[in-house]
Image 1 (cartoon, helix red, strand yellow):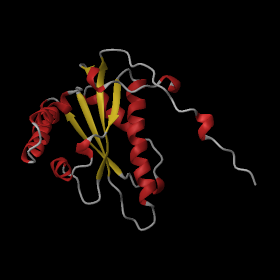
Image 2 (spheres, one colour; image 1 turned 45 degrees about the vertical axis):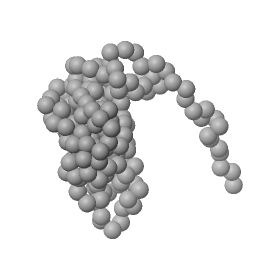
Image 3 (cartoon, helix red, strand yellow; image 1 turned 135 degrees about the vertical axis):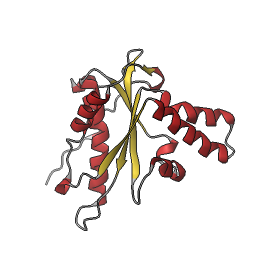
Length: 181
Protein backbone atom coordinates (compact mmCIF):
# COMPACT_ATOMS: atom_id res chain seq x y z
CA UNK A 1 0.00 0.00 0.00
CA UNK A 2 1.38 3.37 -1.03
CA UNK A 3 0.42 5.02 2.26
CA UNK A 4 2.94 2.76 4.02
CA UNK A 5 5.90 3.33 1.68
CA UNK A 6 9.08 4.30 3.47
CA UNK A 7 12.70 4.66 2.51
CA UNK A 8 15.11 2.30 4.20
CA UNK A 9 18.01 3.66 6.21
CA UNK A 10 21.14 3.45 4.05
CA UNK A 11 23.10 2.14 7.02
CA UNK A 12 20.77 -0.82 7.57
CA UNK A 13 20.53 -2.33 4.10
CA UNK A 14 22.10 -5.70 3.44
CA UNK A 15 21.94 -9.01 1.65
CA UNK A 16 20.12 -10.35 -0.12
CA UNK A 17 19.26 -8.01 -2.92
CA UNK A 18 17.35 -8.56 -6.13
CA UNK A 19 19.07 -10.98 -8.49
CA UNK A 20 19.65 -9.88 -12.11
CA UNK A 21 16.32 -11.22 -13.38
CA UNK A 22 14.41 -9.60 -10.51
CA UNK A 23 16.27 -6.35 -11.05
CA UNK A 24 15.47 -6.39 -14.76
CA UNK A 25 11.79 -6.69 -13.85
CA UNK A 26 12.07 -3.82 -11.37
CA UNK A 27 13.75 -1.64 -13.99
CA UNK A 28 11.02 -2.46 -16.52
CA UNK A 29 8.41 -1.40 -14.00
CA UNK A 30 10.39 1.72 -13.06
CA UNK A 31 10.40 2.78 -16.71
CA UNK A 32 6.60 2.93 -16.83
CA UNK A 33 6.49 6.66 -16.20
CA UNK A 34 5.04 9.73 -17.90
CA UNK A 35 7.31 10.39 -20.87
CA UNK A 36 6.21 13.17 -23.23
CA UNK A 37 6.78 12.09 -26.85
CA UNK A 38 8.14 8.71 -25.69
CA UNK A 39 11.73 9.96 -25.62
CA UNK A 40 12.96 7.76 -22.77
CA UNK A 41 15.08 10.61 -21.38
CA UNK A 42 16.82 8.47 -18.77
CA UNK A 43 18.98 5.38 -18.48
CA UNK A 44 20.26 3.00 -15.82
CA UNK A 45 23.75 2.09 -14.61
CA UNK A 46 23.68 -1.00 -12.38
CA UNK A 47 26.29 -1.76 -9.71
CA UNK A 48 26.33 -5.33 -8.42
CA UNK A 49 28.99 -7.55 -6.86
CA UNK A 50 32.56 -6.38 -7.28
CA UNK A 51 31.52 -3.44 -9.46
CA UNK A 52 30.30 -1.69 -6.29
CA UNK A 53 33.77 -1.83 -4.70
CA UNK A 54 35.52 -0.88 -7.94
CA UNK A 55 33.32 2.19 -8.35
CA UNK A 56 33.92 3.08 -4.70
CA UNK A 57 37.67 2.86 -5.33
CA UNK A 58 37.20 5.29 -8.22
CA UNK A 59 35.27 7.71 -6.01
CA UNK A 60 37.93 7.42 -3.30
CA UNK A 61 40.63 8.17 -5.87
CA UNK A 62 38.80 11.34 -6.92
CA UNK A 63 38.66 12.61 -3.34
CA UNK A 64 42.21 11.49 -2.55
CA UNK A 65 43.55 13.57 -5.47
CA UNK A 66 41.75 16.56 -3.94
CA UNK A 67 43.53 15.96 -0.64
CA UNK A 68 40.28 15.32 1.21
CA UNK A 69 40.52 13.89 4.74
CA UNK A 70 41.13 10.14 4.94
CA UNK A 71 37.72 9.65 6.59
CA UNK A 72 35.94 11.18 3.55
CA UNK A 73 38.02 9.10 1.18
CA UNK A 74 37.16 5.88 3.03
CA UNK A 75 33.47 6.81 3.24
CA UNK A 76 33.43 7.27 -0.54
CA UNK A 77 35.22 3.95 -1.00
CA UNK A 78 32.52 2.12 0.98
CA UNK A 79 29.45 4.08 -0.19
CA UNK A 80 28.33 1.62 -2.86
CA UNK A 81 28.83 -1.33 -0.51
CA UNK A 82 25.87 -0.15 1.61
CA UNK A 83 23.49 -2.32 -0.40
CA UNK A 84 23.84 -5.41 -2.58
CA UNK A 85 22.51 -3.53 -5.62
CA UNK A 86 22.83 0.14 -6.52
CA UNK A 87 21.17 1.63 -9.57
CA UNK A 88 22.18 5.02 -10.92
CA UNK A 89 19.26 6.62 -12.70
CA UNK A 90 20.71 9.02 -15.24
CA UNK A 91 18.72 11.91 -16.65
CA UNK A 92 19.56 11.72 -20.34
CA UNK A 93 17.57 14.46 -22.09
CA UNK A 94 16.83 14.28 -25.78
CA UNK A 95 17.08 17.54 -27.72
CA UNK A 96 14.17 17.16 -30.11
CA UNK A 97 13.55 20.90 -30.25
CA UNK A 98 10.02 20.44 -28.87
CA UNK A 99 10.03 18.69 -25.50
CA UNK A 100 10.98 20.89 -22.53
CA UNK A 101 14.04 19.80 -20.58
CA UNK A 102 12.06 20.19 -17.35
CA UNK A 103 9.53 17.56 -18.44
CA UNK A 104 12.34 15.16 -19.28
CA UNK A 105 14.03 15.71 -15.92
CA UNK A 106 10.73 15.13 -14.15
CA UNK A 107 10.39 11.86 -16.06
CA UNK A 108 13.82 10.77 -14.74
CA UNK A 109 12.72 11.64 -11.21
CA UNK A 110 9.57 9.62 -11.70
CA UNK A 111 11.74 6.66 -12.73
CA UNK A 112 13.62 6.94 -9.43
CA UNK A 113 10.42 6.92 -7.44
CA UNK A 114 8.84 4.15 -9.49
CA UNK A 115 11.93 2.05 -8.85
CA UNK A 116 11.46 2.46 -5.10
CA UNK A 117 7.76 1.64 -5.38
CA UNK A 118 8.47 -1.46 -7.48
CA UNK A 119 11.17 -2.59 -5.06
CA UNK A 120 8.92 -2.12 -2.02
CA UNK A 121 6.00 -3.89 -3.72
CA UNK A 122 8.35 -6.81 -4.48
CA UNK A 123 9.51 -7.07 -0.88
CA UNK A 124 12.81 -5.20 -1.18
CA UNK A 125 13.95 -2.23 0.86
CA UNK A 126 15.35 0.77 -0.91
CA UNK A 127 16.44 4.36 -0.61
CA UNK A 128 16.95 7.07 -3.25
CA UNK A 129 20.05 9.17 -2.59
CA UNK A 130 22.14 11.63 -4.51
CA UNK A 131 25.08 12.71 -2.33
CA UNK A 132 28.18 14.40 -3.72
CA UNK A 133 28.93 11.89 -6.50
CA UNK A 134 25.67 12.76 -8.24
CA UNK A 135 26.83 16.36 -8.74
CA UNK A 136 30.56 15.94 -9.23
CA UNK A 137 32.06 16.32 -12.71
CA UNK A 138 34.86 13.79 -12.13
CA UNK A 139 32.39 11.25 -10.74
CA UNK A 140 30.30 11.88 -13.86
CA UNK A 141 33.31 11.02 -16.02
CA UNK A 142 33.84 7.85 -13.96
CA UNK A 143 30.18 6.96 -14.57
CA UNK A 144 30.55 7.62 -18.29
CA UNK A 145 27.98 10.41 -18.38
CA UNK A 146 27.51 11.98 -21.77
CA UNK A 147 26.98 15.64 -22.61
CA UNK A 148 23.97 17.10 -20.76
CA UNK A 149 23.44 13.93 -18.69
CA UNK A 150 23.34 14.01 -14.93
CA UNK A 151 22.49 11.67 -12.10
CA UNK A 152 18.86 11.87 -10.99
CA UNK A 153 19.61 9.55 -8.11
CA UNK A 154 21.21 6.40 -6.83
CA UNK A 155 18.74 3.73 -5.71
CA UNK A 156 20.22 1.46 -3.06
CA UNK A 157 18.31 -1.86 -2.99
CA UNK A 158 18.47 -4.81 -0.65
CA UNK A 159 17.01 -6.17 2.54
CA UNK A 160 16.42 -3.89 5.50
CA UNK A 161 18.09 -5.10 8.68
CA UNK A 162 15.66 -3.09 10.80
CA UNK A 163 12.18 -1.65 10.30
CA UNK A 164 12.06 1.78 8.71
CA UNK A 165 10.49 4.13 11.25
CA UNK A 166 7.76 6.52 10.20
CA UNK A 167 8.97 10.08 9.88
CA UNK A 168 7.19 13.39 10.13
CA UNK A 169 5.29 14.13 6.94
CA UNK A 170 4.28 17.45 5.44
CA UNK A 171 0.84 18.73 6.37
CA UNK A 172 -0.80 18.55 2.96
CA UNK A 173 -3.60 20.88 3.98
CA UNK A 174 -1.04 23.67 4.56
CA UNK A 175 0.34 23.15 1.05
CA UNK A 176 -2.97 22.91 -0.80
CA UNK A 177 -5.05 25.68 -2.26
CA UNK A 178 -8.05 25.56 -4.51
CA UNK A 179 -8.02 27.99 -7.37
CA UNK A 180 -11.13 30.07 -7.75
CA UNK A 181 -12.23 32.12 -10.73
